[in-house]
Image (cartoon, rainbow over all chains, first blue to last red; front, top):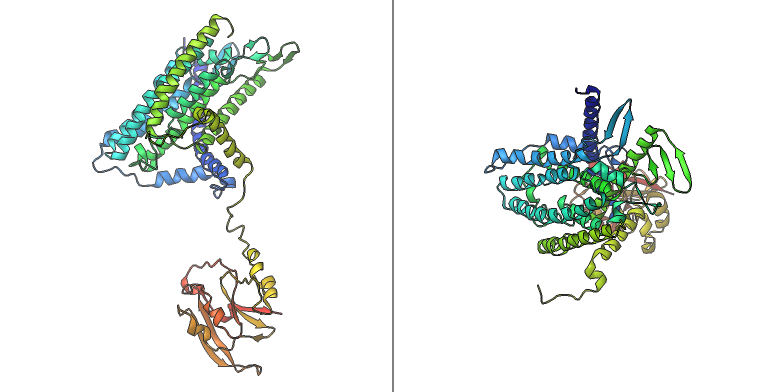
Amino acid sequence: MVDYITVAIYTVMSVVVFVLILTTVAFLTLAERRISAFMQDRLGPNRVGPWGLFQPVADGIKFIMKEDITPLEANKLLYTLAPILTIIPAMLTFAVVPFGHDLFLHGRVINLQIANLNVGILYVFAIASMGIFGIIIGGWASNNKYSLLGGLRSASQFISYEISMGLAVIGILMVYGSLKLNDIALYQGSLWFNTIPKWGILVQPLGFIIFLVSVFAETNRVPFDLPEAESELVGGYHTEYSSMKFAFFFMGEYANMITASALIATLYFGGWQVPYLHNIGFIIPKFGIVHMQQWLVAIIEVLSFVIKVGFFLFFFLWVRWTLPRFRFDQLTALGWKVLIPLGILNIVITGALIMLRII
Amino acid sequence: MTENKKKYTFKEAVYFIEILRGLGVTIKHFFTRRKFAINYPEEKLNITGNTQATMKVMDKDAQELIDRVEVTMNYRGKHALLVDGDLGRCVACKMCETVCPFFAIYIEPEESPDPRKERSPKIFEVDLTRCAYCGYCVEACPENAITMTSFYSLVARQRPELSIQRKELRTVIK
């Protein structure tokens, strides 16, 4: 029998998460401009509303009002399909990211997660790699050499860095022994020598660096933003796009950033975990227990998740305004000659440490 | 690519440590911002501030002009016609009108009602849309009657609004 109330709860939750992601995307575009301005001793957009907070609204109106141009020789169907194929995977990936511990409400167990899939990480990889189709198709369909070059670059970049990303995640899977992201987050609350929480960054420092670099490449962010490389390829794969189609590519990039930040937080920074916080409250070894209500614990956990994701979103922007872009041969060399061997080394080390029962 | 290969130290070759240093630089700027930009309509550039050194007093009233009408020696903004008390300095000699390369000044003289001088301008008009702010009129003036202020915010909805008449140019000193 279908439990309609549970279904209703999950439906509401997915709608809320969807809206929240879209809002975050909107404000992220503003944050990017403001933070970049601050880092370069400028002011940034500060005219629309207090501190420029309504700038995303103005941008949105502008995008909708602009003329939607399709190049004459473009393949109309694929040209329209490409932005859709970019934004949908970016949104879908977030479905398996947990943002809190299970809640117990009147005999029901509610995961603070839209879908607690048993293939969690595989789902993330499967959906995230679909995002590349949008970029390649967009580059090809717009019948422009710069767009095509951007699309091809992103294809080779994705293939190179998908592997190192997978190798980094294998280390995590070996340590925590589950594909479910919720389980991975849960295990990171367990303690090492009864004192230090087993967060991914402490257990897998090398894996974390590999994953971080790969994620930057996967989201097409500086220093790996070769697919759009505005100083070389005009605008890269979205050169010909205008109006809302361009906005979809734009939103897809930022939605990808949010998902990537959430993944980094979940896999390496304990997800929603707060050190020593359990279902019943804080349990501090050799000190005692601070009891707390379930809802209070849930709020603290969700807040902890939001803060971690927020930090990594800031980190994405921070890196963007620090590093110059890689040359293309440097990019592939880093992927194939450095990160993949390091990823394999990481797996070997992790295996050895597990054999020695250190992790 | 191989001929000019630079020898990197270990720290530079790893690159990761150098990235951290770079991140440090950007975050330092993020938290301790130096202010270069000016929020224009709310804040205004203080133009008089940097001109004190060049004040080698051409006009005996220069200091007072700086204090009162923000006249500077090296910034050339909107014009001003100086008036000593009740007596306008301009004698309508048309020197400025003659020297003006852009025909921005138009003067119609009349007999001065004041016995202290012979002529005074009936109409003194500066077309600020024609003016290139070269300052020749200020140099040509034998009476130090016309000067330029630091007023630079010349905004109007229609061109005739920027053609400034004598009354608007009048600046009383003393």
